[in-house]
Length: 299
Length: 329
Image 1 (cartoon, each protein chain N blue to C red):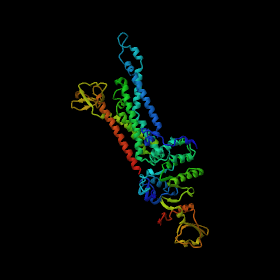
Image 2: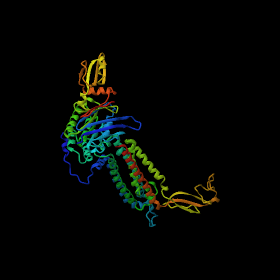
Image 3: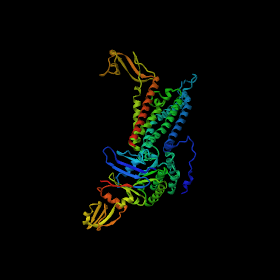
Image 4: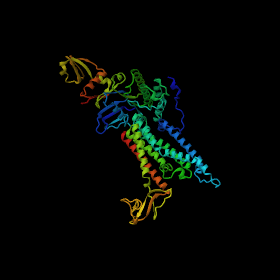
């Protein structure tokens, strides 16, 4: 298995000749074997990044490799589920799985695909058009997992599901992925749904990478502090991501460069606090953490 | 929970001839279209067999007749026989249906075959299996092209067979548009042009309904251009004489007029018949001419028409591949 799942350098994608850049100057390196969350507000470029990685979109500039090769070369080794889960409405569930078998000759695992479908209590003779949103997602996931991919790209996989179905499907997905050592990259704008299931974070904002690295390392690199408002000047050596003043009280998220003064009360931020702070202050410098080396890039 | 247990999990032994891979997927996804085409083909075959069967009767019904005692069949009896009307009407209807097959094929190719898949994202579903976009398009075009070629060829042969001696009183003249197209390979190349133009329309619009409309319109334009300029596709034969000549029915007349003493050919009328500013004085008339296509020009005209339609099909296919290649990595 390849060490790096996705690697991009100076990646940019613009729709139309005069269109807006959906991705710009993206440099990232996602190690294999992780469950990676691609987080960001709507329009941040999450779907574009996944579609480029899936070999469906041509980057306008820069390059991206998947599993050490060009995305189109890696086609048999990766699976992709688009945001709207396109399936043929006229096919039955069984025929949809047959389609997966026919279009993936030599590496189709019918047992996995059927198990995923069976866990959802789906009638294989039911037509796809008669299925609910959650059931469609399950069939789309079955089609993706049946391919036994090394890399699974999921674009907002749980967006239109109720909490129960979301929990159930995420469980199925992570179990299957863990069993085969599949690298999972999933995008979401709901941070809460990723907590506890992901160990790598990629935060995109306005088409650029804002944060990238192992989740624990990213959380450890940040500290949430509260203290008197007047003490803000004393924070100069540290990188302040975001600071808010309520009355005489100051709350800030920062990347400490050394020991902090005693005037500050410190706490470890949650994933949600980390993401929100970065989204609220687009001018904060990006932080790209490697699994081994740490480097701070200037924005 | 137990429902899936009914589905055999072990891969069944499949015959080598059974469609699989992309071929299977194209046949399965467009099963309804396949059934409709199959039904239409069976109906066409049945109609042609019926036409062949009543062919003798139809010919007898337009034969010579006489009063009783003349040795010929009675005219009263002949006029009462309707086999010729049925033969003429049904054959012309079937011919028109065959000549117009390219229109629904183009609309289907644009709408259901390509446009809908691009619109709903199911094309991307195929492209993220182990299938490249170019192979996907190749299968999408090759499978229907093969079936349509086989079907249209069989339909043309059946049509020729049912027309027997091609008596123009029953089957229509060779230059009648629908009869012209459906008695040779043009019927096949027209359908292929419809398929290719529809597919190209699908790739251009990327949406089902506009693609169906655009494919239909493009095919309609091709059909009408080929029909309007058909007589120009091969050099005509010219005949001159002292009197206006009467061409046989089998000739497709393109132009007729007068040859002036200067040698110039004009299509104006004589002043003695219809005096107006453009008329020609009797004294200037040296003779008459007409240009036409004799029946022997059927094959050259037909093959050029078929060739143009085939060239359009090839160009549209190439454009479709080029477009897809440019859009996908």
